[in-house]
Length: 152
Image 1 (spheres, rainbow, N blue to C red):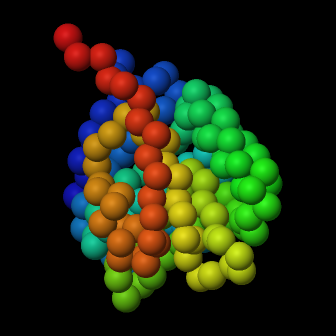
Image 2: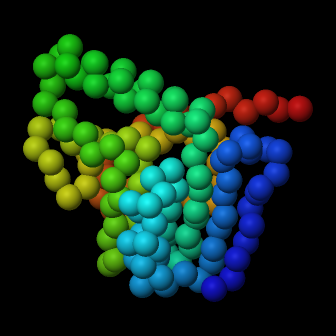
């Protein structure tokens, strides 16, 4: 398993870090999900065909996620939509070699194996194309909130 450290520099919030590992088998990814999911809820793992991105979330990331979730849920309540939330549950498909934890996700009406809508907060990017992961999992719609990056 080769390791590629993408960034632990000043470009990330102090408490948000990323690590990308190449050559990770499905069995290794599955074992890490089992080991870490309940013990480290702020750890996000995204797996795509042998590449595994490990990322911690910052308080700012979680604040923005909560604001958006509240807005979506208030909108659904106001329109009397049957919206069921999965939060940031882990979704995986071995046959597609994909897995991740959305920041928030929802099903319209009844619950399904994967959400109808996923919400992603992007403060820092890089590592894995999450749209490819979502497409391989069968998620129909992904909404991104992206912080405007300062260009110098």
